[in-house]
Length: 130
Image 1 (tube, helix red, strand yellow):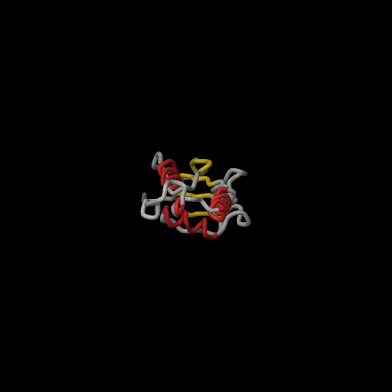
Image 2 (cartoon, one colour):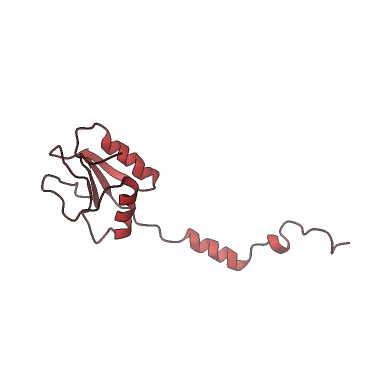
């Protein structure tokens, strides 16, 4: 009796409707979040600190483009600086803050210089606890 047999694959609930196909296509074609150039600078004498912070951010899907030491060391206070405020949202800065547990700061110290392509500068100071 055909009315009691289970539907074959591709019949009934198994079919992909045109509406579902359209939703899937929209998700694939959705614009991606623009990549942000994050630079991390180690302002301490603790070797490898910036590399450790890079790993932490990258595990949180925030790629880091540059790791370096600050020109002057030691730097006492850690901070997250938006070098290109128009390109970086507060939400993005807050996400970095929550991952690394360091504050967002307004003004970069004159002892710190970021690369020209950097949009977010993370400075790890003596107060940074990994």
